[in-house]
Length: 173
Length: 173
DNA sequence: CTTTGCATGTAAACCGTTACATGATTTT
DNA sequence: AAAATCATGTAACGGTTTACATGCAAAG
Image (tube, rainbow over all chains, first blue to last red; front, side):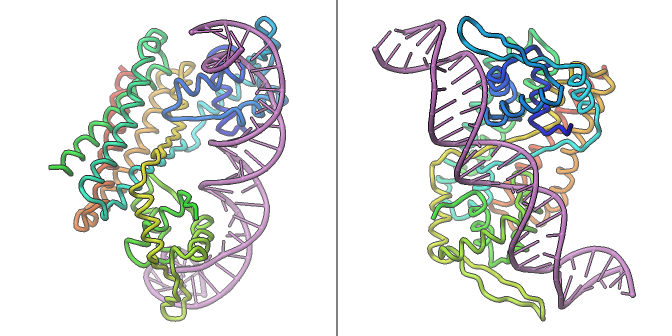
């Protein structure tokens, strides 16, 4: 069975502990959001596909009267996940930044407009820094990969924010 | 007429000077690649759509016997581009980094495997730095938005490279 | 009792890449 | 003469988001 990017996130998140589709989505949104996204429209069909192919196994895990289905990795699922983790295929890296695109075409803007754009870009990075900061204590306790990635995100968005601040002061200077 | 992300790149690139579809693609690949991509499969249909809607105007610009069609902005096109540039809609920002995804799930890896992953991630950023460096002299002369964006990319990918180097030394320590 | 959150799912629309087809010109 | 580059385009495929539909539980 061929793994697509969504399969990988789903398998990885499930290995961190038995999870429902809903929980996977929450986890991605909270801890992986700055470098990965998913939607229910991908997760639920993918869970079905992974179970049909024997990589995960779902069980009824209703709380009170509320229906829930929680999934665990099978041995085949563990193998598939480890296979991807240790594979040498080139690592997908994509960035799409409409702010930089505007800046690229900004020669027709006044300094004030340009400064506004740069500040708006900076604000987005600051938001991410805040969000990541708010979960840092929790992540530090748990440590491991998720914490390393969080530190990366914090440094990365902090750097972008500073860089943009500096660009702005050059513009308004 | 509603502008999608591709319309914006196309309009912006054409404002930098009369361009063919082929030239737009080259320009994006060379100067915008680290924060934006496009393919012929998007560009050519988009050029048709923009011309049908009166935002650009194409003319035959054959060199020798080779057929070419070069486009310029119409007044409506200039307006549409400026409208987008000065709009306040939230700026799309997306990042997809399979390296960080692997790192997130890397708790089952040995230090050596982890180091290999981090080095592979670093290598990708170094490649971008090299590519951007190779066009810096040219961009500096022209200045403006494209040069600002290039400097941003250089700083950004250089920072990622350094950060990963540091993470690696923590792992192998 | 109303809103927010938990929980699962589907369908349509949209976006984007890849692969293919074609052919001329320039460089090696 | 062959290979690389210029040049335009389409079709198929795959991935992703958005909107919709449904319903119960907890919190205000």
